[in-house]
Every structure is written in C-alpha cells, then in structure tokens.
Amino acid sequence: MHGLLCGRSLFRRWWRHEHRHFAAGRAPGRSWPGGAAGRGVLLVVLAMVALGWANSPWAGAYESLRAVRFGPAGLHLDLSVRQWAADGLLAVFFVVVGNGLRQEFVNGELRNPRRAVLPIVAALGGVAVPATGRRADQPHLM
Image (tube, rainbow, N blue to C red; front, side, top):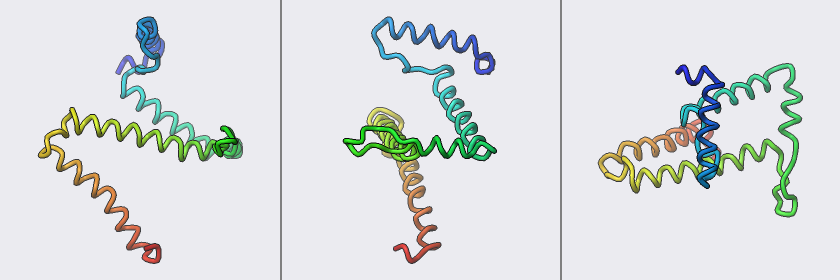
C-alpha cells in the first residue's frame, strides 16, 4: 500500500522497469505501476474525475469536449469523442475480455468443465436476468 501512496518511488520503479523492456527490444507500456491493481486504481480515479467534471459548473466544457469530432472521414470514422468512447472502447473491451476468456478456457482454471460450469451459468444469468426484466418492463419491445 505504501508504494501506491508514494508516487515518486512508484514512478521510478516503473520507469526503470519500462526502460529495461525497451532496451531488451520489448514493447514499452506492458506494465503499469502497481500491476493490474494500479491500472484499476487509475481507471477508477479517471472515472471519478469525469463524473465530477460532468456534474460541475464546467459541464458545458465537458459536453463541448465530447462533441469534438476526429478520425478519417474517408473511412466514415469521423466520430465524436463520445462515439469513440462508446463504440471504439467497447470493441477494445470485448476483444480483451474475449482473449482473456480464451486463455482461461485453453490454459487456465476453466479448462476443466466441472470448474467452468459455475462461471458459465453466472454469465448466462447475467444476460438473461436483465433481458427478462426489460421484457417484463417494456413488453411492446418484443
């Protein structure tokens, strides 16, 4: 925990680690201070900053930033920041999750069918329960 609170030493350790990767010919950015926990903390902090900004007196600046458009128009990818965040990052998320699941099914804990039953049932329930609730709430959609 002390490493997360002491930002300078954590940054120095990360920088030395990344420099070794770069010098060895490996891609930089493969690790982050604190590993997966550090990335999770960063994600939560950034989400809190965005929520605070969107609900502050400067919400107009937040909305105007979300409306900024960029991307190759010739490929019909001239999208707003909002669209990139909603569509592009969602696609990246599912690619990462799909690769993680594949790894678990092939080499990980879920390669044993007996161990895989509970997570599979939980995933199906996570899809079916909200769909059933939406169907009950809005029957005209089906």
